[in-house]
Amino acid sequence: MKELKNVIGEMILSDDYSPKMCGILNLIVEDKMNSIEFKKYLSQQCITVSDIKIETLQVVIDYANECLRDDILTEVEMRNIQLLKLFLKIKEGDFMRYGKGQDITEILAWQLRKMYSDGIIDKKEALAMNDLQCLFGLSYDQFLCIVNEVSEEFS
Image (cartoon, rainbow, N blue to C red; front, side):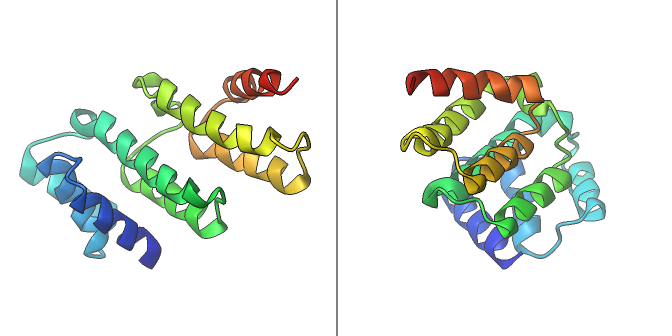
């Protein structure tokens, strides 16, 4: 959780988010990452989850990008992303439903190209592919479409 708080703290400082979103992110930094505090904050700001949905998706994308800088998605990072999605009320399919498909495709293609660069997908990379699919709540068909597109580049 410490790593999540640190990265979220840095993300707040980037000034890429609205004041309302920064308020939500501050809940994480202040150890108030729970549904009661989240609902309370939304109520105080007179907003709903729907009002901030696209920005919450962007937060998860930005956090995932930060985690993937070293090309490794650790168990802790994966768990933190799941916690972040749960806290921000992000459901399976939301990334595609709310127009973040291109962002997701770019992240996945970037990672998949690195995996395919040596011409072999080992067990570790296969597990990483599964994590990437779960990370963004993609269906098997959605993920396979991206995988096929990238693998054709290496054929």
